[in-house]
Structures are given as structure tokens and as C-alpha cells.
Amino acid sequence: MKTMKFKTNINCSNCVAKVTPFLDKKTGKGSWNVDTESDDKILTVENSELTAEDIVKTIKRTGFEANQI
Image 1 (cartoon, rainbow, N blue to C red):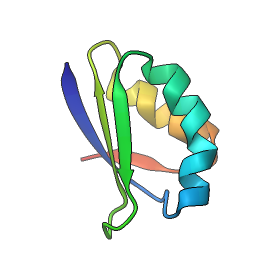
Image 2: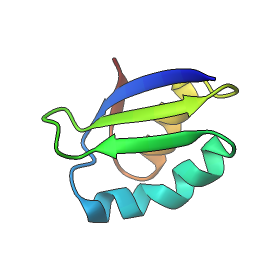
Image 3: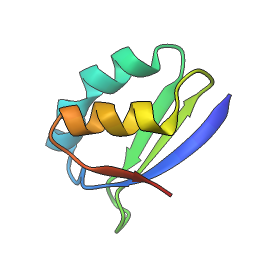
Image 4: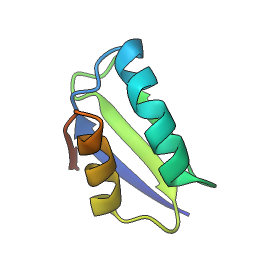
């Protein structure tokens, strides 16, 4: 399993709730977490099948931004 990190603008629990169904569906057997306490609102995704581009596209579809770091 590989770990990818992204700087996002997902900054509160309501924002996390908005992206949850999309990320849950996309990551499947993987896992993900957003550190909303961090200044950079870091999204960490652990998955062996997805690319960083897959995650960025999924986040953008929900109205947020994500840039791999």
C-alpha cells in the first residue's frame, strides 16, 4: 500500500462530510484522513491502486482543491 499526501482546502467537519462518500467510494480498500487542524489541511490517502491524479480529480469533483505534496 502506498501513502500519498495532498494540501487541500478541506477545512472543517462539514467539508470532510461532503467529500466522505466520494473518497470512500474511490479508495475502496484503502483509507484516507484529512488533518483539518493543520495549516495546510493535509489529506493522507493509503491505497495501492489509485494515482495522485485520481485523488485530485475526485476532490475537485466535490468542489475542493488538492495538490500533491
